[in-house]
Length: 350
Image (cartoon, rainbow, N blue to C red; front, side):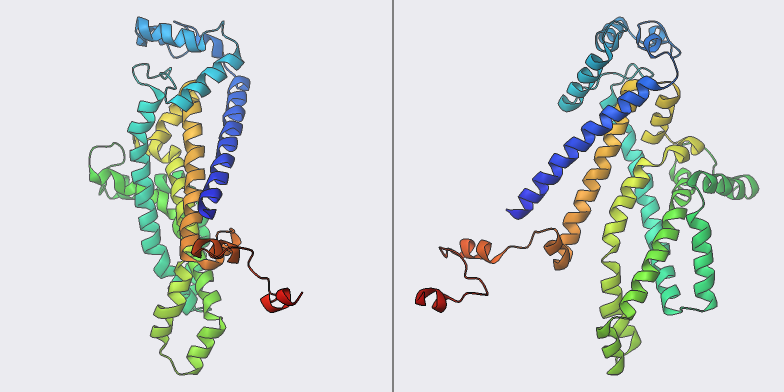
């Protein structure tokens, strides 16, 4: 029951946050330079809507976002469509609705993000563990130096460097396009550079912290093998907090592939978002922004629930642990549960 209440409260906060995001995005779009009215009017604007849209599509767009409709009414129309799953057609891609674009393009972005997270975990975890075990050695110093460089390297710059090396200089991988498995290698690696740096530092600090715990020191004093101590105690406790990092990291990568998809010509949601921003495609921009915000909040909620399932201390901090009164009700004991300061015998004597 406590879990249901917790999820209900978080969902209510998510709804309020989405409303705030939608309002802020709408206001910024209205204040942005460019003639929105000409784009929204049938047959005008930089997008050339009349040449691309059918007569039925033109009528539908005019009813939703025509120049004679007040801005607040356009906003309410869009939000009502977002709730019912009908956000209308895109200005740029008039033959597709916003929902169809998101459903078709997001799996590509999610696949890139999942591959980047997998690469980051596979590389960063061993690096962080070795850096912690060999603390204050040249391995630790070199790893932390490389981590610092990687953490400050933007993914689009990493993508350009990878293209110059593996496409232009060596000719091993294609620099552009979305035709086969070989096209995903460079984008995934470029996306994984910064997460590798962040995760390696995180794993190193977590392992060092667990190595200083009293139970580890006691196990060493009893003559326990270092490998056994590391595998049974240190690594298990050090890897558990990674759940709180990997979930938001995946959501951040899935929503942050804008530059990578533009550089490598990948038809993901980030590329559609970039084109929508350049061409002032209001419905697609609004829909993408709401989807990105919802994805981040859902991933944060999922991470909290999974971490609470794994760690009792987190359950207690989130108020998900049942109290004595809850246990008494569950097993069918009536009345109040006696407190520690008053025993049943003392209560009867009174």
